[in-house]
Image (cartoon, rainbow, N blue to C red; front, side):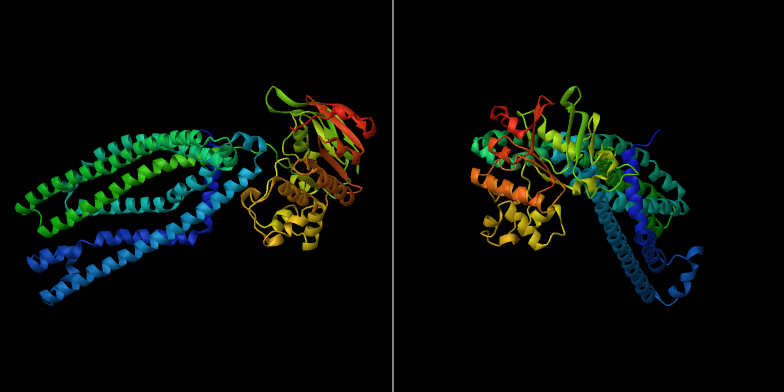
Length: 589
């Protein structure tokens, strides 16, 4: 059977993390061994007290080394046994602490590595994937599903190993003590494992549905919170509450089903355990009455039976959690198995410094099969040329700019910059050479300074201020409470639409790129501000390639040529003087 590619990547991340923390893993396993040994030794001081000190029975041959101690008198022997019980308890507590702390440490490191790998992988996936995926679902996978896997690969794995070690060791000692009673105990185990198998199937099914519903709920919540202004403006709060109520009711039902199955595992294990202990007491007491077993040996045996069922009960609980975690693992594997649509070639070259010549040669592209957005588009822009791109809404103008940034790959044809096809460049280096102002004015919840410097992290304060002045943003920035150090709200909601647009323009200008592409850069500002912005861009970007999507006829005065895009095709490429105002189509796509 071929291994699922996502599973291989998931296991590789875990193995790498465990390999880097080999010392902690070894010490955790040592703690497991110490706990098992302490559990094995715990009942023996009580046996000595009952059989040898209280009842005066002779020592068995394996315990002959205790004869000198018992000859010192009952009180000294009792004190020694009490001290032994305290030391065993101390050793058990120390080893359990070592095990718990180190497994938690390893588990958190696994989550750290896994979340980092998932975040990095998601950033490498194309915009086509992100347009189709639910953001809330992705957040749930990165945040919640990885937490469940932390426990599987660290804490639960070590505890499982410890329980198995304790189970085997105690079973061996019980067989040595009394094989007949051991067979009585073993007779109950098949029933235990059968119950576990049947109930865990139900847990796995309900957990799978619950995780899907949690992802849908997170997506719905994210959508509503990001659209709160629209919802309140249309008075649709009640409608959205009803839709969200439906989502959480589905989640409630699946959660209750999961809890019921988990509780059934725990109660079934407890019932079968109690039955096994009762039968063992009955048969063991009968053997004591017949003289084939001492009271102390029965006490040791019953302690072992209780301890034997404890790891089995814990294994039941662990198996229920593991069933839920396997669902989370499968969800993470789905993400890791997705191959990025756009990858750098092994021999890709660095872009830059670029002259700025752009060529589209018979380019076709669509977001869905059979629905082309661009159809056999060809045009050439000379280095340093200033181009206005116009056309009606839905013509494919924004898509054309996205292809230039290699956010998507064309289905046919090729795009060249300075005579070199885009796939020959390393993507990150290519995008560093292109300044971009998107139609959606996206800002981050950090300072104004950091937002402007996002495209050029090493920008000096002077460069940041010069870009802000060119974008006509300096005036309102200095009026903010902390000026350039003022922290914006999430997505820049504390600013007006025009202010956000100017900051996005400043973010593109601070790079001083050889190619600048702008999608409706002055749509949210007044006519006078738009004129001043265009003059500033013309001055700062003089001699460099500029491509601007616009629908404002007044904007066209500063361009060398106009490209008209209609129904996915370039229908006209003309100098400014020949472009009629009537050709301008309002809107973008």
